[in-house]
Image (cartoon, rainbow, N blue to C red; front, side, top):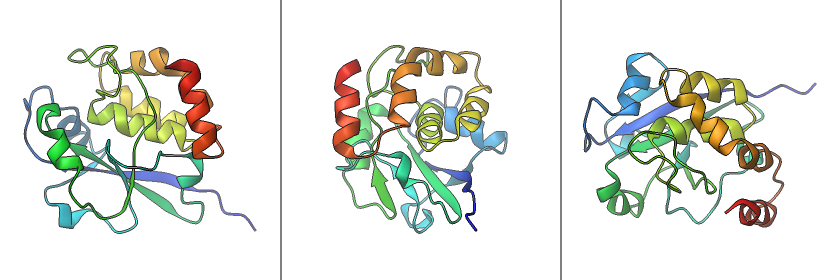
Length: 173
């Protein structure tokens, strides 16, 4: 008998480098939508770690079909991101395909996603579209993220390989 995958658990590695009033990760933690972790050692084993420098792209097949997937976003300042993302991280590092930010700070910029946008994009690609919408619903600009990236997200969620995803990505960006 086939068991459906459970909704992912979300974690955020909080590095406290940006304005706490604009921190989407802190808001997710406040509302119980993600769990905060404060040290790299606390990243759960076998997690999908969203890492902008990872060589592998997140694919729908990365979803853990036998149990609950854990997805980790790293909440840090974009000015300090390279140092954070090039260090050794536990889990399975995956980068997101190209998407446009909808957050007010980086609106329409490629790859400049907030933590909530990154977790929502991962959810969408892994097949949890309703969860992606729920995560984004805690921000007044949240639904704009899916509107702005609807077609690429729909197609990324159908990708069968990195080559296939790269071809899809090149159609849009």
